[in-house]
Image (cartoon, rainbow, N blue to C red; front, side, top):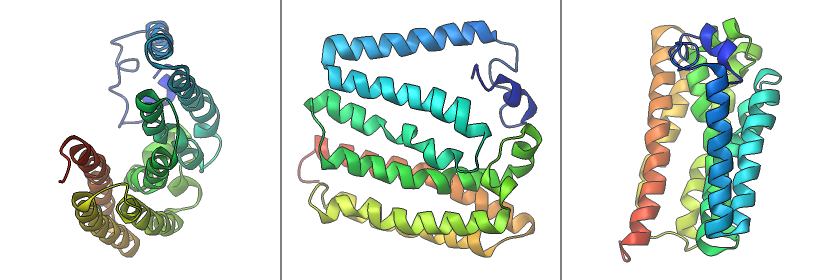
Length: 234
């Protein structure tokens, strides 16, 4: 990413990204990003509706300016506050499809919002040295591993029932109820495991497992909602 090219070059996890790897220049990256952002907002505004275009423009602004340029390097709550931008796409899509907003997309945004801290803090637990070397104040760097594990567990305790709630209010069906309950139990178990295992290779493995499963967890939730929408009665 254009703005983060300096820290991307320092962190082993990101050192092979296009700019630090020398495959593109910062100027080319900036030009491509601006073009893509303007084109996508323009297409939505002209071919879909103004509401979805406005929401997309706000999402891009929030992610690039509020999160990347400001929060990421200034506060350990960077991915909590900034994570809202990553949660907005369901609202953009809902506005594009319906031309309005309602409770359902707000609920989907809330699910992604509460999913974000356990997901990224699990990664940060076993990449803490990387973040510290680059000067990024992720929670394990500023507050330590124990506090990070406590926060992961707390957010997961909020996330799991929230993710099941679409089925409870009639927004989702039986398939979603089953998938969200079973995968939610797995997510909670792995968060508890991270909380319990605090040192050595066991702690690293626990954090890696939670990070990996969290990706599958969110995918399965939204994939099931899609299947239920496409195939009524599932």
